[in-house]
Image 1 (cartoon, rainbow, N blue to C red):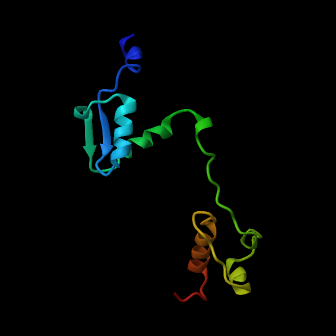
Image 2: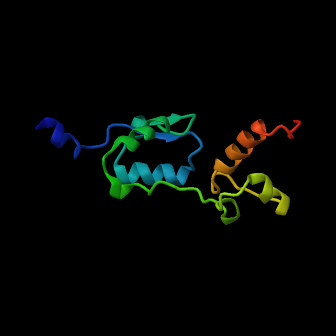
Image 3: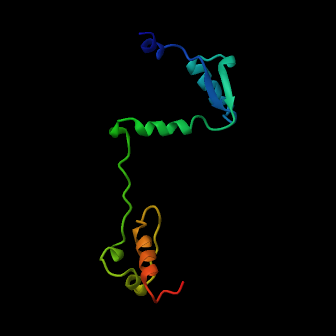
Length: 117
């Protein structure tokens, strides 16, 4: 019971970055009704490592859909990557374009006796 009520209690500590502008600091202190003695300045951005815990929250409505990189149409036909390169340059932007063509290129080059280096 006490823990449930605690979330509605007064703020007991405010951690801010040392570089926070004074007007923002004053605004937070005023709105949260925090005394100057309860404000702690930190050197680094606050709690960034603990944000990873949010990934474990089972709320899919709050998360972005997984990103699926695209495969260029010129590389999805199943033909040899070398044939596609002979037709012209291929420019891939990672992570937006799939890395699979790069892996395919390296695998085929490793198996091709005509590839020297």
